[in-house]
Amino acid sequence: MKKERVVVKIGSSSLTNQQGSLSREKLKQYADEIIRLRQAGNEVILISSGAVAAGFYDLGYPSRPVTTAGKQAAAAVGQSQLMQAYNEEFSRVNIACGQLLLTRENFANHSQYQNAHSTITELLHRQVLPIINENDSIAVDELTFGDNDMLSALVAGLVHADTLLILTDINGIYDKNPYEDPEAKKYHFIPSITNDLMEQAGESSSSVGTGGMRSKLKAAGTAIRLGTRVFVGRLGSGHRLEDVLSGKGDGTYIGVPGGDVVNNKKQWIGLHSVIAGAVVVDEGAAKALLRSGKSLLPAGIVEVQGHFSAGNVVDVYDQKDQLLGRGQVNMSAKELQAVKGKSSAEAASFTLTSKSEVIHRDNWITTVRER
Image (tube, rainbow, N blue to C red):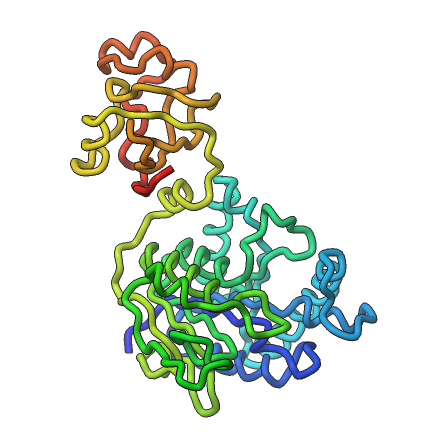
């Protein structure tokens, strides 16, 4: 079997007991499977929920807290306990663990995004197991990933993983809620994520997890767009993660191996960057961007919106108000106001940059949709 770079995401419901607290027995089961994956020559990055579950009992809560302050306090206590549990399991076979706690802000900041990639890459090079979780103790709503499903998809894209395994307490994606409808049918393979699938998907059936099937489908859609195939399912009795990689898992496979890989710069522009403004382009520029693989030049710009600097990311619209994509600009809004509609030769005397392109093709990503 081909050796792969694999991101394994384990949800809270897969790591907890009936009381909702961390189960060392379950954690050991997953650790053993990851050990087998590594011993077979695969590279593994672990995305693990479970910090709140590990910490709430020591704070005196009878069950998982529901307030933001309670969950963040439980995560602060539980994260170290979660890592201690993993360290104890992996140290049995001399595997060192490296912890990364991330927020959306780390992805939005281009330098931090690059540093996260460099750190994970170095850990893998040194045979260390990266264990990643959202920084639940300090993240605020607007800076969260929503749940670790999306975090796992974004990390899979960041490290150009071959496969993302989203492990949960249900064996795949169904056309209806299998807990409510005994006639619900499971999808064994889904080539792509459609609107119909999203509408069918429900929320989490677990009191300890935050990500339901809709969350998992959304994350899977992101991962396959970035070139990573996805498995959503459970690790049943007698099953091995190696079985999952070989297509024999108890769940649903989404996407196909060998998808187009999106480089990190374009991932950052398309998914993580803060949009600083917008430009509107004429029909010729729109065709050049979408059909001819060209860069955006001053001559094609008809309107500049917002106040932005060179190096910022802006949305690009056509004159019908359709979003074509976004890109990193080489000129400020003030400069663009002065050069819009001009030829590159005419524009040169009005700008501080020696670059003729407003947005170079290498710093552009297409995302066609209505505003």
